[in-house]
Amino acid sequence: MQFTTVSILSALSALAAVEAHSDTIWHVTDLNAGCRSSSDCSYLFNIVGDKSDKSDFTPGFSAQCTARTQQLDDSPRPCTLVGSRKSGKYNVDEVNAYVSQTLSDERGSETHFDVEVKFNDGSAKYIYHAGKTQNYDDFVAAKNFDIYPIAEQGSAK
Image (tube, rainbow, N blue to C red; front, side):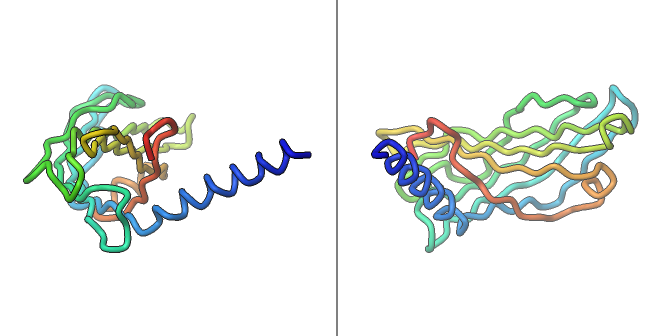
């Protein structure tokens, strides 16, 4: 019985931690993505993570992400940080992203979008992810949208 109570309390604490990050928003702008063939896909977008007064969980940052890829390529690639790497108590180490696109009807023409931000506070390292999965046609038509980051399991926060 004690184990069950501890497990429930741990699960509720973890849920509360995820909810605490709901004030953190990353803004994707100027998205240009698509595939001309199975071996010729590309993407270009800007991403901004605002340093919110409501949230002290992630740093502010700005980056541009671009790559030439093939269909179904979900290899994260480095983005170029724009401006300062320092944001409050955090230092942004890197921003990585991938856009895995497919034109094939076999997989429902899905596009998977993921951004990863690695940062530190001088004593601990943190990794946050945000992403979405969407129909290919709807995704390539979108130019601006928001995503909501969560801590990667094993991250210090």
